[in-house]
Amino acid sequence: MKLLDGKRGVVFGIANDRSYAWCISRQLMDQGAKCVFTHLPGAKMEHRTRLAVEELGVRHPWMMPCDVQKDEDLDAVFGRLKQDFGKIDFLVHSVAFADRRFLEIGNFHTTPRAVWNQALDISAYSLLAMGQRAIDVMPDGGSILAMSYYGGEKVIPGYNIMGIAKAALEHTARYLALELGRKKIRVNTISGGPLRTLAASAVGGISAVFDHYKHKSPLGRNIEGEEVGNTAVFLLSDQSSAITGENIHVDCGYSTIGV
Image 1 (cartoon, rainbow, N blue to C red):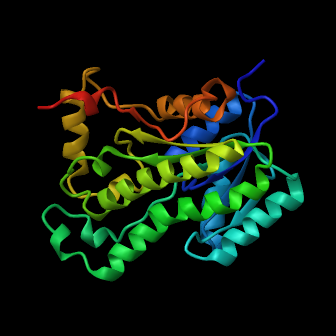
Image 2 (image 1 turned 120 degrees about the vertical axis):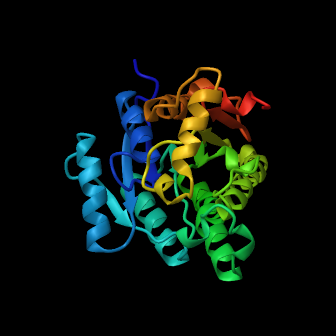
């Protein structure tokens, strides 16, 4: 018996086979889950996500386009989930974006209003928007998981506006956990250590961050995507039935170190 046998859920955010969402999906499916997916609109984005999903061994995957800034796209996705499956058991939010021109060390103070609003909308408000709609497809309860990073708690030079967005994401998850808890829906976040993903490559000084984590973390190394995936399995399974509103660090202990 696997931890997620009989459970089905939707994963937002697979960009390629190095993304957190991909690593999480692989571990979920290894534990018996059935996953369906969204991709950014456009043929190129669909092709890229489809290739990544096929690397997971999924042939003819259930996929839909979704721009999380558009309510009509989210309505369409959740409407189809309801129509095709009746209900789901979990949702993975691995979506974030900020204009990379403002992810350079020393230029946070130059961030314009439009860039701020876009980063917060895509990276944080989208979780709230998904939570609103998840209620209808989780009538028996379920689990929602979002991906965060330590830059939402402490200043990471170069992370800039994404740090603000991750702070907002974590608090959004906590407030959702309060209100969705009575509907038996749990909401948690994972604060994963740096991983060599497409998103990470946009952050100024990221190579120095990897080196710093390796030398300063208690385990003396950087994380593997599989380790975040294993934590996701736990949080989306019934084994974590009393855990909600939490932010779990999977960072080789880096967040426990003061200097």
